[in-house]
Image (tube, rainbow, N blue to C red; front, top):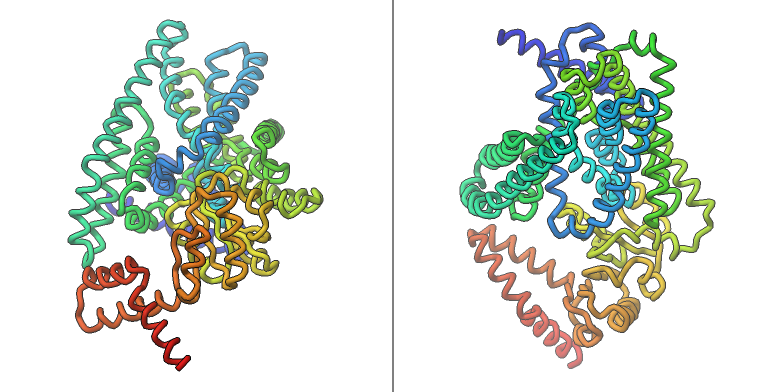
Length: 577
């Protein structure tokens, strides 16, 4: 038995390594490679490994993916996204579901069938879309934020769908019975999430604080703690009849509120990547090449219809919510596929007799084909989006305004040199939305190619600051190394957006009083900071403890580098003499 399991694992990893490596060499998406690998060795291929043997591992991949998404979202960030999660996301699911349901009812007259099919096809693939977003480095860009908002709402919708299907399978079409069971399910959902939130708030911080004391020399303890939190939360929601993924997502949001977030992200990264790969392979195992060949016309027709329908709906809604046509179409194509939860819903419907086996198989093949096309559709969407935006002929400020209009409680970075990039990376690591401005064409284009949220614009112009959403931002960071420009920017910000916290980078503190008078809240003198960091390294090398080094640094900073500033002034007086 053990040898069979070992052979299965070796086969899975071997197929993944070999085929995915070929796809990467051909500059094709690894997701396609995993799907092809699964089809080759799976149920309808060589049958070396079956779907049943890998489905649990694949489901765990989705669990870790949603935990990772939760880690990137603090509760405050989720509040800032609520317009798009509960507005755009809800409308997408509702409109798509109603149109598909209407088509099924008109064709078959079966309302139960319509609910299952419309529910399964209205959802997109969180696993594949987020993988594509990561591969294209679009997490911090508008397309990444739109995709995340819609997918979050879809993940919430999975809960009632998983409750409704067994009711329909039991013949529970009585309205009163359905209402009672749904109300009971909602109650259980509230209880489950309430328990997770309370437990997380009460126990997570003390647990991570305790672990931090012993984790400096050991890396396995944080990994074990993270697995405990993820799997414990997933088991809790499943115990209440909900999805594993929902518990993992909520636990991710809770961990994101603690100092352990970065450590948790590092701990689950290898598990998430490996298990997600196995999930994609398990999806590929359901691909029946002969069935696709025999039902080619039907599958192609349904696949194209689903892609066109969801593309049109999502594109139209994005335009309605104020996004430009290029980004809207890109989002529509990126999210036009069926999702992994359709496998669960259709499989459950088939087991309960609501879906005929032939119908279920056709639907699963349609979902699989549309998922497999996602990387290609994303490339097409990005290309068309860029072409549309070039033809729009918008002014620079209009381009910025379109790209930043969904942002709220974000950070604005003026100047995107080495320091500006570092600030952006730090914010990215904490899942904080930002938008940067720079006037250097080459620098901006290079940054955008690397998935950074940067626009060409002059931060000293009021119209540019209005376009970038300065009235909705929390903090304004100036990293420009030009005192005249810095003063001009701070004057404009102080006069028009005085609720913004302004942080300025300077070479030293010679003109600090003037900037403080202009409304600057914090000045970071790079020469003094470099001296502090080097001094800290020296103290560490001679055996001074880390808490004491941090205390000394904080003492200098809290006194506005008074010792360093005084030394600087003394040197100036000596030069005058």
